Image (cartoon, rainbow, N blue to C red; front, side, top):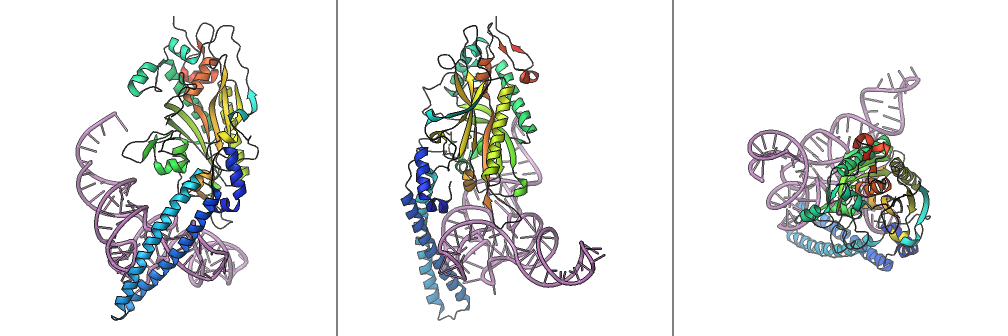
Amino acid sequence: MLDLQFICDNADLIEKNCQSRGVTCDIPRLIELRKKRSELIVAGDDLRRQQKETAAKIPKATSEERPSLIEFGKQLKSQVADNESTLKEIETDLNAELSRLPNLTHPDAPIGGEEDAVVLRTWGKVPEFDFEPKDHVELMSDLDMVDFESGAKVAGSGFYFLKNEAVLLELAMVQFAIEKVRAAGFDLYTTPDLARQEVLEGTGYQPRGPETQIYSIENSDLSLIATAEIPLGGMLKDQILDESSLPMRVAGLSHCFRTEAGGHGKASKGIYRVHQFTKVEMFGFTTPDLEASNEFHQLIVGIEEEIFQALEIPYQVIDTPTGDLGGPAYRKFDLEAWMPGRGESGEYGEVTSASNCTDFQARRLGIRCRNNEEKGTKFVHTLNGTAIAVTRAMIALIENHQQADGSIRIPEALRKWVGMDVIPAKS
RNA sequence: GGAGAGGUGGCAGAGUGGCCGAAUGCACCGGUCUUGAAAACCGGCGUGGGGAAACUCACCGGGGGUUCGAAUCCCCCCCUCUCCGCCA
């Protein structure tokens, strides 16, 4: 959520920003709603003041004065009630309008849609196989590492059972990522896999409604989380932090649940787009200046790169264009790993995502900070990034490290946890 | 899941219908005193909304209600603690 005052003071900028992000907005209406809201608040405050005054007179009033004061008090009460209900309607509208507005955008972020993504750098050598490489679906079924049929039977299409070495791989990747982020100074958490609606909304997710990507629990205000970003951000909801405790680094291991509504058809094969997966997520709270949050953003991307380098997986770093940023992000860097089994003869596929959300999430979550020098509080900046999303990383790992005999080489970094150098081909 | 007790400012803790945005203590900040510090004393010390400002309004876990008037009474929910049951 953006600051209302800021929006009204910078209407042109906001409209331009919405346009480049492909979001329709109605700033004049917003300004009008705000004006109405102010008027109602002023009127309501005055009514309440009169109400207090009247109420205060009553104990001291003579028995002759009393009935008329009580009568006046009753009138005020009903006027206050009217004022409040009108105000509530206006605020609901205002809030709806406000929720549609995306965050501001980093001046260097490329403007446009998916096709305008900028490749910032690439790492690693795309493997050249002297045999016909298989995709992860074929590899995993040949090696008895996955069971899609049972997944579909138990929970429906898009769910799966990992088996045998895939389980070892999942645990190894999690261990590796956890060790990595801990070394980088992140406090470790396992998080709730469910979160309340207010936390979802605070983080910028829409838990209900036709467009939602979120599973909701019936008869409750809980939803399954789509990422640990949600509980990690919600963790400090409504808190005022001391600036000396920033930047704060937290990392969470959780399951992620996504309905993937409308996602069928594109790259739906295998474990690329699934309803549930395991992920280690980094999250940061920084002081509210771009220098601090941009620096943290670089830190996160750096860790992501180190992880994929250690896994010996070629990747490219994408500067996500404005049309693809989503609501909360000010800037977003994605890692796309090379996936030899994707497309005709291999393609890059998204494996991580790192966002600087500036104060957009903090404003709605009510996460502030203060210092001893200045009076008042400010909203912190929040950032999030994937350390490892198990299914996507597993695809890249398996497809890149497959060998001619159908076996899969385990990169050095994971061997101590997988307990083997190679996943042997089944004879 | 059942029974009970609770949730008040950074913390502790008073307050059971009007004089309470809230005593008091601690912590914190400024001052006096002191060579310096401590102690003592004096003063300050929550967050947010609205307003150009004066100023005003809201907030005592959250939401509703009763009342001229609610931290205080009533209802629902959330959370914490103790005991019992169940359970990985």
